Image 1 (cartoon, rainbow, N blue to C red):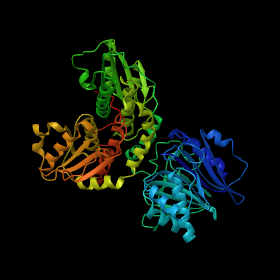
Image 2: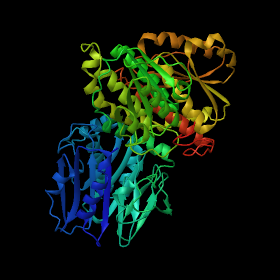
Image 3: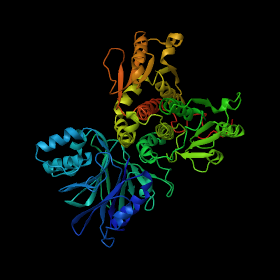
Image 4: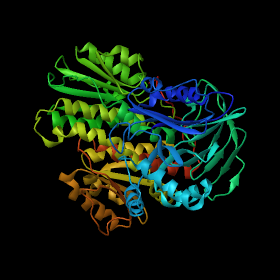
Length: 590
């Protein structure tokens, strides 16, 4: 997700507010930035690649503009350059946009048939030309927005200015965060609290489908049914970037939607030479242990190094078979997990090298290990980890890639380019919330839910099952699909939800055979499949198709729908999603 900021008012200079806001959003990561503002009845757009400092050097801060919008972009559709950078403009309409317009290709063809020409490679230019086309037909921005919502599919948070209405900002929100900051004789738009925290601690959350007309003195909000509503003005503590959920109902949902950014921030790690070790032992707890299981499959398959995964709380009390030729990898989001910390100390007594995969800098485990890789997931507030887990899997995947024993494999040759596409794939999955909510409505009332898969898919099942049980309190289990007939299949009855994950081509047919077995016994089957392996059949009731990517990276997009299904199930059950009962974010006791 990129960054949006907007300002309307005469108390401050728009450029000062826009640049300050963009600088506060730099933590999100970006490759270009830009602003659009109206001064002396003239629209000016400035865009630059690279750091915001480069953009600042092009601006005349003496211009006392009273309205403007700004953006920091991380390239999705189109390479990072000034043409693809935001804001995008077409005649009277100028916008900044976060999210993905899923049907942009079809819309582009439709607009081209009307004679419109395109300069960039972005879906955002499609959005701005569509908005202009609708505005041109009606001469009414609000009517254009209403029609835009009917035509555009996907996720979008949009800040808009119209050259014919120099005293008004517009905002449109669907599946991407956008808030309105409420000031005195001034109002603001932002995708995240830090962008406006220096100016106001009053804000309005826009819900999906909402749009707004904002002047310096008035904010009019319309809901998804195009009815004017009285918005609730909330208060956050200025200076605390994590107090606000940024328009999301829960921190967990916010953190899931940050996962594409996490991939961008964590995509480069310092190489650790795994090949000098005879064996690797991964120690971790909970979701970190599940990340370790994914890492085991990848390291063994591509780096060719025997790898074991130990639950840290068990490792402390078992006979140890490690030595100086063993690397012990400790994985922990907080870096304070007591059992994992103790496992590291034990490893050091056996003269094993230790590597920490940690999210919190200078935490206890980070200080204890010989080597450390920080996951760069950012602070995670929800107890149930999502983005930190994803970052851990990414680090392990990159370690497998960097230590690959066969550099000539196609998956190794293409990984770096595939990695650049990964955030786009994740954002495309984040946009499909309707499908996840539909599935959640079918299973949220069930008492037992099962996940099945083989190999690396089984590791993903374990994490998916944990997400569901820890926030929804529904009994859920993950099983290796081949184990079903050895006892577990006796639990299957009419309507039992069974979620099957199938991403490994080499064993896809075997897992599909197991899905047919449970379907024949009345199970409600949810089929998770990559588009490369997608098959039609009568052995499933619902299907989620994951975009095919490099096999080393495939676990990351695959887990995203599982996280969202768990979230929506918990929401339907009215659970305390961010703070599940009996759980803590950092487990610092045994």
